[in-house]
Length: 456
Image 1 (cartoon, rainbow, N blue to C red):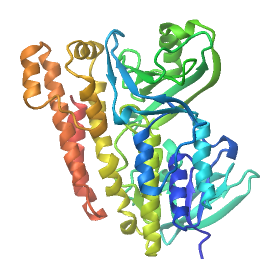
Image 2 (image 1 turned 90 degrees about the vertical axis):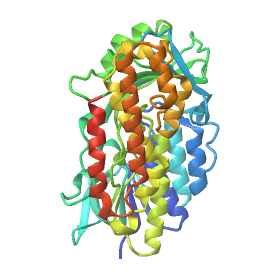
Image 3 (image 1 turned 135 degrees about the vertical axis):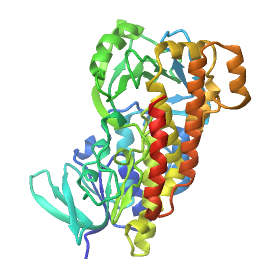
Image 4 (image 1 turned 180 degrees about the horizontal axis):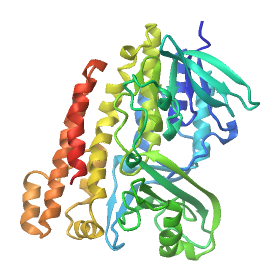
């Protein structure tokens, strides 16, 4: 007799959504987090979320309206700003309409939803390791706030422990799940939240993202107002060899170059964090085991946003786990349906944007300024790319017109190549295998696309 149907390790938005979904379907769920209950949700974040993510998960599992006291300000668009700071592209549309929010209150809200449905929470509790029975995951060993160890059994364990993926890394060598994420597939970031009583943000409904390859190689600086006199500001970079510390970028680049720093500021929060920025884990399930959120690499590779995709992953994982439990079969085959569902709804787009990430890593400030000045890339193009993972500017008649009208042919040729690679990987994700038997052959088709992307 097991203690719970499902144990979810990690009470972030992805883990809480998984627990919420399962409990709504009548399953016994234990949700564990290392933080004190009142601190769950306190996390380094850009504190922004598109409305379409909430609507999507509401359609799947009945997620209610986000309470108004969580929302700091309504967001209507995003400005992408070139290194010269003179040219910008404003993206407005369904995926850029949303909210800036209080991260702690958002986390507490998701936690409250889960508890209201009957999820049992153990806060201030450390997950130490996986337990096995006959070679398969069978539960976890925990240590409570008093330092006492305890073994807890379950039919399924969900790793929602964040970027560390601490349970994922404990899986045996025989697992088909990737246990370790490459450094180059991670972003390190730092962010501060200020009140600006002497500075008014003129367009608090617009989020700003600044590209500068000299300062934030493989990343960006963000300025996300949370009303006229409050702002979330940060910098993130890929953890490639020789990368700069985001704290140094904040001190030596961001602070000297933004006007609001010249006024009186009240620091509300300052913290750093790490997030995966790549395609999702190729398989997010094994026997009696599932991955959700950052542990599953469910993060947008371009802007590092992970709340929307994590709650989607949590909903889909919860639905799939409930179906498997109903059939009394929690094998990898029974849980496999989670993979193609997520890949169809978001994973294919993630993978395509991952290819685009490598293209962005290998272009210069001059390339970006040129593309903005000559309107090689327009806001509508980038919005379409962010929504679908498909780049249309490198194909067809449009590209031919660009070739005849502007001069930087090498850059345009690279744009064309990345557009084709992005389409290749989107098509491959449409063919994601229906069972574990097809995974190796599918992966063998995946690697050459990434190898080509890294050489652009």
